[in-house]
Length: 323
Ligand SMILES: C[S@@+](CC[C@H](N)C(=O)[O-])C[C@H]1O[C@@H](n2cnc3c(N)ncnc32)[C@H](O)[C@@H]1O
Image 1 (tube, rainbow, N blue to C red):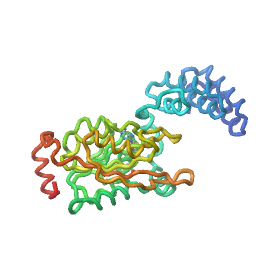
Image 2: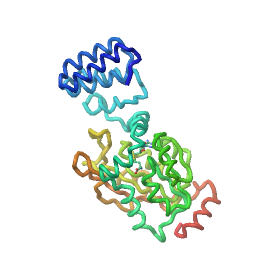
Image 3: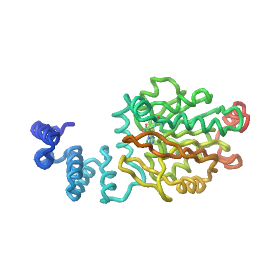
Image 4: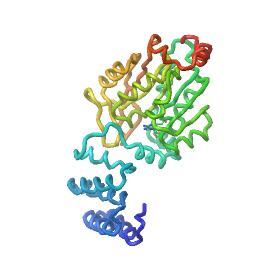
């Protein structure tokens, strides 16, 4: 982290050392001095917001986060989420894409070990089991999309059941790891809504393992998923379970969705809820994170006219006898 100004960087270094020693107010003062020299430094203002927030100076934190946001409208640091969490901004419907991409780019290389080995992450396996358990026939699919594929943990689970497996993810770093593993027939770096907007009646299965936690309002995504599915196609996903009928942003910058919210959103988008079950998604701070595993379906009678390529549907029929 550098401001581009040598003296400001030195002050930050000293401020960090003070912070480590527990001298919070001196650290904040020194960071403020650094920012007098590097006043356009968005990441510095964001850090100041964090330190002020931690010190209980809410107004000061709001001022610093707001400055960080103004200086970096893409909001790579996620200042809008911090502002929402301290009640100084409305909860955004989704986190800034640049923030999500940055978080996962930074953690792509150690993502698998961090999540699976240290946090007991089980969602890909649990979704694969759910899809297999409730399959109509042999549980094979012609064309599967792994939405928010990350490093390919879900792709690995679905590879053997998919004649064609595609992955898409916002984070270039995550996609690079997925590419190295070689499970996918095609991979793309794109935002989920933007990717789905370009697809009509294409997949007989869409999987989104631990991805909707980074999308607050799911209405648009459910509609886009319905359009992207073939009639009879299925959408398997997980969410973290929230209370009530809506969705909330939690301290970990992930959204939690209520059961009723998910069920009503699917119905409003024209998707049929096949199954919703409770599961522990992973551990956090030694505590289980409760989630929902969901299987939904586009009705077979829905949108046959959407099918852009009769050849594709014929191919799907040949591989999946149930469709
Ligand atoms: C917790 S990881 C899960 C990855 C993978 N599905 C798995 O089960 O290991 C969440 C992934 O969702 C991606 N993601 C989050 N929001 C996204 C969006 N709006 N569009 C595309 N990808 C997104 C992130 O980049 C990240 O790779």
